[in-house]
Structure formats: structure tokens, C-alpha cells
Image 1 (tube, rainbow, N blue to C red):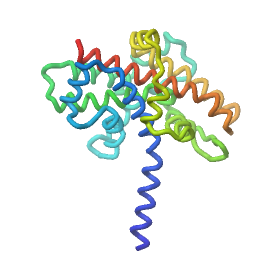
Image 2 (cartoon, helix red, strand yellow):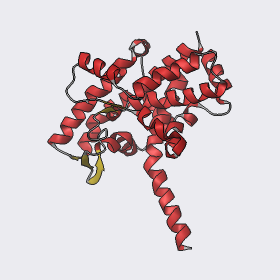
Image 3 (cartoon, rainbow, N blue to C red):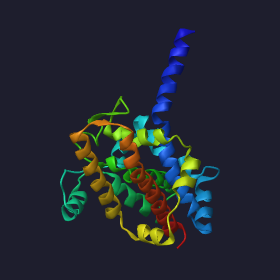
Amino acid sequence: MKKPLFIVLILFCAIALISWGVTGHRTVAKIAENHLTPKTQLAIKELLGKETLPDVSTWADEIRSNPDYKFTGAYHYVNLPAGLNFEQFVAAIKALPIDNAYKIIQKCEMDIADPQKSKQAKVTALKFLVHVIGDIHQPMHVSHAEDKGGNDIQITFNGDGTNLHSLWDSGLIEQEGLSYQKMAVAYDTATPEQITKWQSDNLLIWLWESYQIAEILYKEAAENPKFEKEYYDEHLPVLQNRILKGGIRLAGVLNGLFDK
């Protein structure tokens, strides 16, 4: 009896560790769903069947433990040096020699638009696209290689030990305590003018926004790594804005691909 219970507890803890990451990605996907045209909705249904965008939004994380998909780990982020201006930032991204979020988003768009690609290839590309666009709107996914995107930056939040990356992946969302459906309702407040502007920004701008925020987060953690409720209060609007922009921009990409 003890061994099965121990295994159950391990599994429960593992699920708990990823559950709020699930919430963030599904919120981005749900906001995107809210802004799809009827033609895009139909095209996505033909690809995904009974699954929804929120359903598939975490697939790219779920497959990473499969040895056949180990190579996809680098798809989820962009690593860059600190202190770059915009011109240096753009040059650094374009010079990256390996696969990364910037390259994969473009490849997925091309695969979906390619009439020669199989349905399964398009489904895979769509699943990656939904997830990675969410990833790059999390600031610590556009950050520094030397600290593994903030995973090596140890902090405390409300007295509990964690790291900077984990705090922005899940800790702040967990603090809010909403389901992805409720988060989508609360966050989906963009005006028509904002939607037009955000969807017209190119991919490098999306990444640049996250990079700029990450640089601030690094500086704050270096100055005082003990974060209390005031940190949550100050940074929640930033988190909400990144999730909202991710959803609005994902919708724009999908409408551009499926409703031409």
C-alpha cells in the first residue's frame, strides 16, 4: 500500500508543478479563440477535430519528456546577451545558429500555409504555434542563456523559495487563483485600436517587449531577491498584459493563415 501511495503523491506533485503553466497557456489560447473569424474557426476544427485551441496549447510541453521530441526543447525560448539595444537585439536574434522560438514560429506559419504539407504536419505546426506564441510573451522566455532563462536566479516569494523563471511561469498566476476560463474573461479587455496595433506589430517587436521586461526583472531580483505581496500587486498588470497580447496576436496569426 505504501509504494502505490508514494507514487500517487509524486504524480500529484508533478501535476501541481505544471498545472498553472497549463492555465497560462490555455488562457492565451482561449483569448485567441474569442477573436477568430468564422472561417478560421472552421479551418481549425477541420484540423483538430474535437480538440480546441486551449486543449492543444500545452501539447508542446507534454511531449518534451518523449525522447523522440527532445530536440524541441529549444523551440520554447530565445537566449540573448544582456544590455542590447533594439538594433543589436534584432541582429543577435537573426544570427542565432540553432532552432529557437523565433525560427520555429516562422516555420510553423510556413508549414500551415504550404499546400504540399500533410494534414498531420499542419496539425503539428498548429500545436507548436499556439504554444510558442504563448511562450514568447512570458518575459523570461526571452532572456539569458547563462542562467537558463532565470531558472538559476534564486528568489523567495511570500517567504517560499523559488526561481525567477518559475515565478513568472506559474507563481504569479497561482497567486491569482483563477481558472483559465475566468482568466480569459477577466483579461480579454483589448480595445479595437489595441487589437489592430498589437496584431500589426511584427514578431521581433513581440520578442523585444519580453526582452525589455526580462531585463527589468533581472535587475529587480539582483537588487532584492525577497519578493512579497507588493511584487505581485506591481507586476500583475504586466502579466495580464502579456497574456492578453499573446492571445490577441495568436488570433491575428491564425486569421491571417486561415482566412485569406
